[in-house]
Length: 412
Image 1: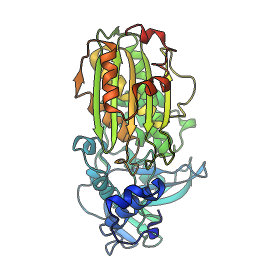
Image 2: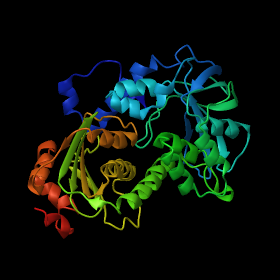
Image 3: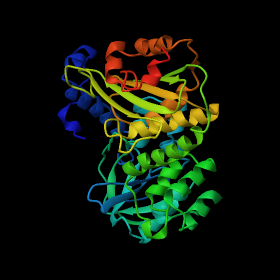
């Protein structure tokens, strides 16, 4: 991030509203950059050697694949750092963007350039951390003291400075769940089956994603590091497909259901419709927002019928698989199947990306707020109320509502 493009002077709300959307986003990001630079361990606390606890967390980059940067994330603090990588807790507490970035900006990425099949001492440590269920104390020697940085990506949570690692050692034996040990030790199990086994043992999606990213699941000849960005979506897709197979044997939902949630400028409306399994995610990004500098709203939609998709959901990408998993979890709880439409509107309040976990956790939280409208039109009225565009426009953009899925409109 280039924070130098703005000085330390605050910009008024009126001037901020008149700024070009790209400039506005850059200013807002640089404002947080300046604020959390003062809290960063590199601000007088960080040396080229330190002792700290990984939350536990690792990061595997994707550029240059199969030669990638792999790193261990840890702050320069000898305390319980579990909150530094806890999306479910952030969501439950409705933690604001600034506070999340405050935690994450203190995570130093002690990294090394490796091939995805490397098994050296550094990767051995990284893999043990990936398996851990609680923070792990480590000792780190870096090539030099890193400068403050804030690494922000659309699908992964942000993190702070990154620097080449010289040496890293575990200062304690990680606490590893028996189920993880079983899945990792069985190298004749397919990765999909191992991931679903761990999910069935109540491991959360974040730990499963870490273990998959560290190349610890699957048949031995196929094991390799998986870039974090890819492993997040892969985990959501694998677990979602497993749940979809389960719920398709269930009785169809007998009434309309609507769920709503808002978090950090993301507005979700979820409509469940009686019928066989079907799913759609429609995203709306307002005109002139930090996400869409154009003069017209931007729409992205992906859809699947009863038989599922045969291609990657390119338009909505990781958001599709994260939201679908959360929906399928709810249908399993209800012991039903249904047609499900999610409308997500992204507003200016969501001015810095935090990762695809925002979608997954906000949809999960939405199921705490249920309404049972009597008619299909009443269900759609909730979308009309929650979004800034007309319902006619939503219908035109939606595969499910535009008449191509006649089984839906037969309920009107």
